[in-house]
Image (cartoon, rainbow, N blue to C red; front, side, top):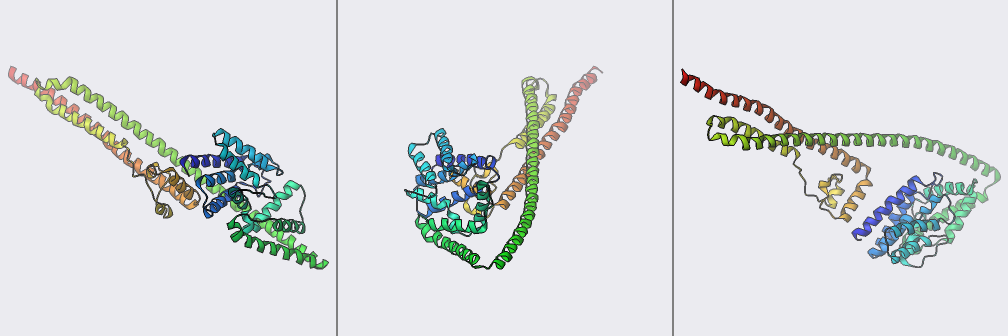
Length: 422
């Protein structure tokens, strides 16, 4: 994909993430940001498998980001129309071509149930949207979908009724791509067979067995509720811990930035003062060396002091930039800190985008990068302040020595005059 396409995808991801994070009802449990991210990943996988061109891959992934944004309206029915409106507004603002608009909107529209794709990218979009039917996430997603269905319908849905709904849906559904038919369809058939067996077993049960099963189900629900409560508490603790870590890193970054600015400011003051002193010496005292040789040593001392202070002040503020490249092996081995510009400024946007995505998807890598970033900022600060301290010491003690040298130089002629007069 081109850099413009990658940039547009990043802007779409940012917009959709904001919409589904801040404007989506909390009662929507299945069609969340996570579902959208999973559909995007599935589209990329199917696009790779079917060797799509860059333009088609770009269009179907862009459609995947917007296909469920319509749920932000709070209504499930005809949410595709609202999704199309949001996608159209985004594409219009970014001056997208009519061809791209038609592809993206066609993919979103094809996800309506029953699905009716007509092009390759629409078929990929449809299979990606229902990718979970043919993998191990089916049961987990089915629970979330049932909870969401309950919120939209406003009533409790018995398990038996939900199984019937699932059976009808799975029997009526079919995958449209080669990947879907070969990889996903067999797994989906296993899920369908399992649901049918449970449904038949439930129908064949005697009333007393059903009562026992119902009691077991209640016990399981109670246990599941307890586990969910514990998981929620654990998640809240982890969330608090993550917020604490974020606060610590933010404070450290602010402190480092403030200290770095202070060091640069002090170095600039020192450089300016010594530059002024040097200019005065060159313009006022250098011409007197021909008539007053006793000033040679004091002037030499203060010139050396000023030049040394300027040099160390420049060393304290002089930037040091590394090569600015990294490899996929560096990312895999977690050797590169992508939070520092010096490690990526010579990389292309697609490679940097890939590297950042890998880092953000790896919590340990991201935390490690933040720790390394703070550590090396501290190392740089220590170097700055070491040079700055040397510069100020040279200036302070050198200035004292220079004043003593000037005093001695002015006393020597006086002593000579007194001796001559005697």
